[in-house]
Length: 590
Image (tube, rainbow, N blue to C red):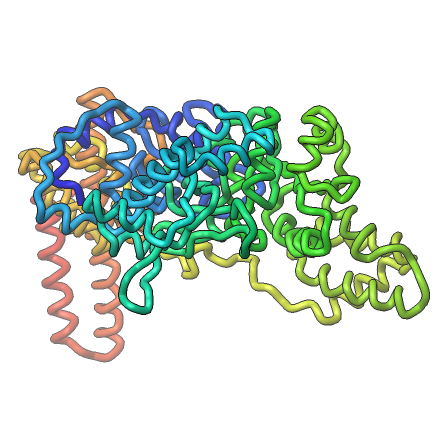
């Protein structure tokens, strides 16, 4: 990692960062009282359970239990390390972190940071090549396809010369790590142990993550050759099925327009952007995945799919329907006329004509029924269509979607709805969804008074300094809460500042963490000093009172059992213990 980050700088970043603005880059939020709410980006849901509290600078999802502060959010949503999240927010907030990088610290730098660094380095190299004499042909190719210079510059388009060692030689000259370049997929180890460039004679498209960092590349051949497109292999920073091309650039436009356009290739997207259509993202050479659909779902519930009109494109649409239904996204599909792909169509007919077609695009369900099931035919054809429909409907979990689909299919094939429902339910696998805990385990109840006490300690540790409140912890029944309370008291008495939200977010997932997160989302119980001190004292007294009450109850049961068994000694021991507890209660004022 890049050296030590002073605590004072971390605090400055937290104080400057606005969690509502940060989360709004990824989630559509609406004001709701003192909080902001939206659909959780970390699990699938139909109604908003994700809440952001500006005055506490924290987020929490009441559905899946994810919560934390600005750093926690970035770490979860962008798969960043803690240090990466701090440095990312430092740049956004203008906080300067002093860098004192030693050779040892360079060697300890995380692999993720190293791979992103080498990718950024290569991206700059490819961009410079495009405007150099070696990139003359690639630049002419872009102009031929009508791509403006500002669009090429915005997407950092570049050129990889048609040479086996051009990038490798450049990296060696700049003393950049060939090991990291190999891990990033930029170079390939040769049979004679001499590495060579993966991308040669190609127009280069950098693939960026949601934070605009280069994580991979796509390369299109300029002259004859195969494959036409070559992509980076997957790495520690790049998984094809978890990323979408240009989402970092399109997300705000998607929010403004209320829907996203999904295309298949780099050039389809660049051409639409070039024509002024900016709410568009593209897949990365693989079939559409659940993760990609969930990525789009962070910004909109409406998607228009523009896949190529060939057979492969039609099959891709069919496969994606189930994913869209599962994600509760409203998907429409547009297969362009004249067998044109989006790039060809927008260049031939312009943006307005394309947007008109998009506005009139049918739902993906309608497309499936009309084009996959097809028109009614003979008995064999209808039976084959029915088989396809039943197999597909069985995968639809949502009962409303399933019934709507059944209705449409029954109308299309002329089959009684009830008969179709019976056939589907006959072999439909059971799913255990009702009452299942999202975290895979049973929720254990945590004593409310103990939770309240820790909540007060988290919010107002200064009120516990020097006070004899540790005996309140001695009467806790939950050992995890007791251990956390002892840690917080030690920090308070040692005058060590602790961030309440960050402290709770680092606890292991479970009822304790979720309970405290929910408490932190609440308004502060009291601000007035005397009332706050009284609340702390009363809560501690109630915890002790409950503890003694439970001890007396247990002793009473033991006395009854001893009497029934005729065990005089045990009975006397219990009575002595009962008297001791009563005296102890009077001394402690319980």
